[in-house]
Amino acid sequence: MESLRLSPEQLKSAVKTVTSSISSWVDGSKSEGVVLGLSGGLDSAVTCSLAAKAKVDVHALILPEMGLTPKSDLDDAIGLAGKLKVRHSVMEINGVVDAVRSSFGRDIGFRHLGNVKARARMLLIYLTANTENRLVLGTSNKTELLTGYFTKHGDGASDCLPIASLYKTQVRQLAQHLKLPSSIIKKAPTAGLWEGQCDEDELGIGYKTLDRILHLSFDEWMMVDEVAEKLKIGQEEVVKVRRRVEDNRHKVNRPEMVRLN
Image (cartoon, rainbow, N blue to C red; front, side, top):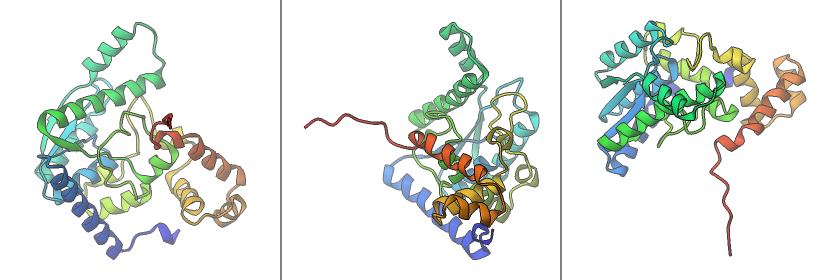
């Protein structure tokens, strides 16, 4: 869909706007710079690249789970940090996760354990932010935020969201514009929370189709039948995506509060 395809001018403008925003956030908060998790995946690579271009002090945390995180992801993350000339630290999350499991004392299902891992990473990121007076840059994109495809208080926690206005397919376009390594651009998206995890398998739909449904539904405000006809897909697929958005809206809303007169 052409409306999701960003022109060279739009990509340049996006880079300028995001880098300017990052710089303003740091100046306005009187912080020493930014910190983010760098996984070796697309979103964190683009976010880190934009932060480096913003000419703020960047500390990239590479947070593998030893025994699960592929060596290729570790190599890609370390390699990108070196290419961008940003400070990086490698911190294994195994000890934090094991401590939680031991303290909890009961069996934790693999999905709940996945949330623990995401929150373990965010614990280390925010600890670094606190001790070094940095802002936390989140790496969530518009697709993830709309569908709730993130862990609440885990990878969804941050002070600023530089790529929140870009759909996943647009983040890939921006990665190409930024000339990021092909090994990162072509990598199958995964949160890496359990063996064999794949975003598109878990979502039950490819990002290309998902982004189109989201764009037509929530940017163009088309009806279900209009979206289905436009994309030549079944209405049930559109309904499923919309239901997911509604069911996960609480993940991006502020906590409910009781207001007293």
